[in-house]
Length: 371
Image 1 (cartoon, one colour):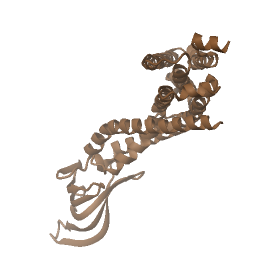
Image 2: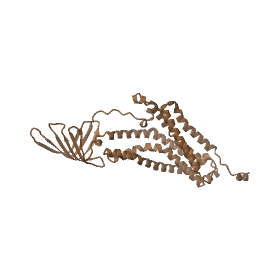
Image 3: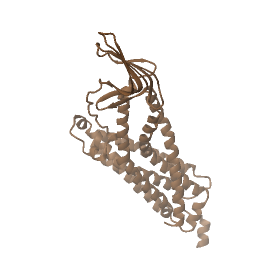
Image 4: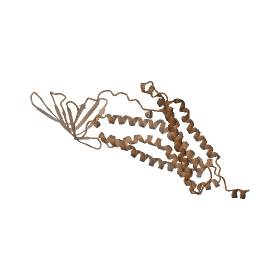
């Protein structure tokens, strides 16, 4: 790679990182609004928000990467064109293909990153997100044990919590357990936490006391404890296995669905999603080539490049709509799957032909002087 190509590639890489960083932050902020409502309603600690947002990042990056590469290539080559740097490079003997080489290298590198995201990181993080969301949604302590309220999860057990800290810790706990009518027990504790595992849900109490009264003798028994586990044994039923949705599956389980009832019913959707995962990252290179063809091919115009930019945006928008349409149609009929690959591959071929065959028409006066 020549020094000029390195110069262009460096600008492209910086612009891509900047665009994808800004877009990811904006999308993450909007996506966090639903998470905030989910967390507040269940009294979860604020750390859950950052945890769940982090699990969404690969999905957002995979969606925004083609847009970021397209925007970066369009902006950088437009700047080279407006600052007459491209004119100097062409006058120095650089061909359109040589000018496009840094953009192609960026596009190929981004395609590789896109495959890593689509084939591994995105399904892995979405699956983890779904599991945690299900766990928090069904978490007994998060849903039932609300603060400043007498919670009666099951007959004979009443729990009151004064407040819940931002970390999810329960403070000021009062519990009355009369599940055994012959020996009702009252618990008080400074703090505690709700813990859910395969054995069920427990409230672990710290720095408290236990009081019980013998119904026959009327004798009160009181003892203090540093830690006590109050068993809430109503959620010990074995959870049914959850069906993994297409977006949280790896490529192998998409192209080869299982024999379960859900997999058989959604077999076409699973296979179509697998092929979309393979073809999707190719659009990163397609968008990069469209942007370069708009900025490199053809003659230079002193009036600006607005029409070229608008044309590139219109082409990318049309290709994106066509890709979504083919993806949806292939879910209904797998015979259309070849078109899912044909569209990006044909677009790459046409774009490369435009770049390689483009020539700048020089003014007639200059041509006569050279003759």
